[in-house]
Image 1 (cartoon, rainbow, N blue to C red):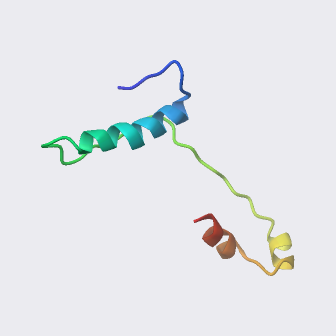
Image 2 (image 1 turned 60 degrees about the vertical axis):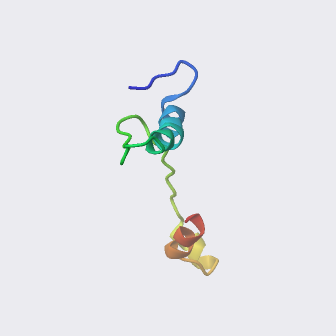
Image 3 (image 1 turned 180 degrees about the horizontal axis):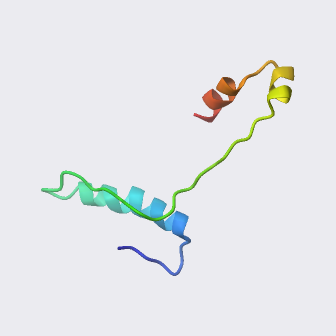
Length: 67
């Protein structure tokens, strides 16, 4: 279990996921390291379809740019 008085839950989850899990995977005999729980960052995009159409774009174009 990981906790931190200095990091918010989203940042703590990201640090553990990227830093700690990669460090564990580099240890001899460790085949996998999974992180569970915590909060993950989420970005929600709400597209105005009429405005997109006026620009000659669609939702798939926006999805491509975001990827």
